[in-house]
Structure formats: structure tokens, C-alpha cells
Amino acid sequence: MKNFAVCFNPNVAHSVEVKDKLLNILSVKGINAAVLDIDALQDGFDFVFVIGGDGTILKSARFFAKFQTPVFGINLGRLGFLSQSSKEDIEKSVDKILDGKFIVQERIMLRYAEYTAMNDFVLKCSAMGRTSKFILKINGKPVCKYLADGIIISTPTGSTAYGLSAGGPVVSPSLNAIIIVPICPHTLTARPLVVADTEKISVCTDETKEHFLYADGQETLLFNKEINIEKSDYKVKLALLENSDFYSVLSGKLHWGVPLKYNY
Image (cartoon, rainbow, N blue to C red; front, side, top):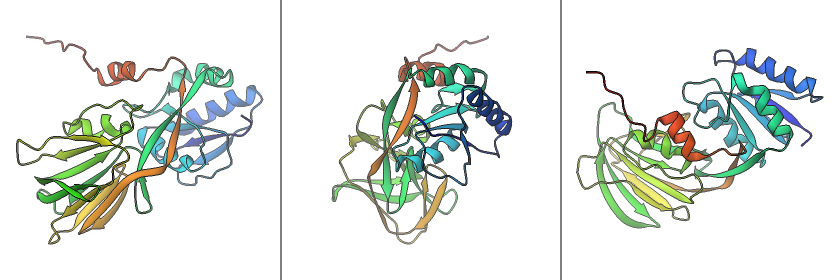
């Protein structure tokens, strides 16, 4: 690797301070990295450090997926599920990366028209507090009708995001799958679905209402009829430190399987 970049979000607290710290560490090691604002991304790099929360990583990862560039997250947010390093451990992380002690894991994305999502697409009625009728089709064949607040179409990476909060399953990011989770369905028989990532997902809505489609909670568009979602041609390349383990992250950051302590 020769060309490094440091991407940061100036709207995240302490991002400028951490960016300067990282640039200094790289400079001491003889590396002059380019600096990229999250709103002014550009290609031409072999490796990108991303400073910010999961939202910053999602945006940068989607962009660099087109160029097959690995991204490495340094967390400044609340959870940092996609990040590999805290701001306190930057120098140790840089040493490991420069020593080649990391792997690059590919993560699938979803696409609708020109929009892509690393986590999920979320469909909701534009009228707050209103349920909608949704018809789910897979490969053109009707599968289910929902009366619900919305539907989440998620990647395995996104299964630990909104889909988890809505009652969906946790899916290992190594699986090639798409997860479909209804949001607050008005029937006890509506359950999440996990299908192969080769399937083509279509959702029709009640045409009398306008609906929003959210891509990773960052890009929004209006639609009022039908959307077609499938796997993107591009895959995100996440740089992970050696011995990084998905299930350890579940336990450490989401407290998965950790007994609750009650004070009576």
C-alpha cells in the first residue's frame, strides 16, 4: 500500500483533533496521507482511515466500494459497531495495519436504482403515525401482505442495526443473505424472512399514500407505487484487525448474552 487517505467528519465532536493525531502518527512513520472531508470524497487510494461514527463509515464505505478500496473505522460515535479502533488505540492500530496484521472482509450491499445501502433500505409511509399496506414479492412472485408501519430490507451487516431493534434476526456478515423485517406488523403471523442474496425483492404499496425510502438512514426519496431491490454489483471492503471476531463484537458492544444485573 502506497497511497493512504484519512477521511473525517468535521461535524462529529473531536474529529479534527483525532484527525490531526492520526496524521502525525502516519507522518512519523514516513506516510503523507491525503485528508478527505466526508462530503468531498475522492478516489485514488490504496487504504482509507475513516474517523467518525457508524454513519460516517457507512457513507465512506459505500463510496469506496466502487474502487475496491479497504476502509478502516476509528470510532468517535456512541456504538461504533463497524469500527475497529477507538481514538485511544490509534497508534497500536496503525502499527498493526502497517505490519500487515489485518484482513479485508467483503460485505454485500443492496441497490435500488442509483441508490445503494450497506445496512438497509427502510420503507415507511410519509404520514407520521400511519400504517400502510405492503405487498412483498420475491422474484416476481407474491409472498406476503403486510399491514405495518414499514418494512426493512437489510444486509447481514445491517441485521444488527434497525432490523435488530424491530425484532429481526442477527445474521453473520459472512453469509450471503437478505433479511426482510416488517416494522410493527398488525398480525401475529408476520415474521422476518431471510432469503438468498440472489433473490430480487419487490415491495408494492398503497398508491393513495406517499412513502419514503431511506438508504442507510442517510438518503431519502419519495415513491408511491413499487420498488425493486437487489444485491449491488459492488461490495464494501472493511479492514479488520487480526483476531477480530463478529461474535466478540456482539458481546462487547451489544452485550449479547450478558446476564442483566438487577438491583432490588
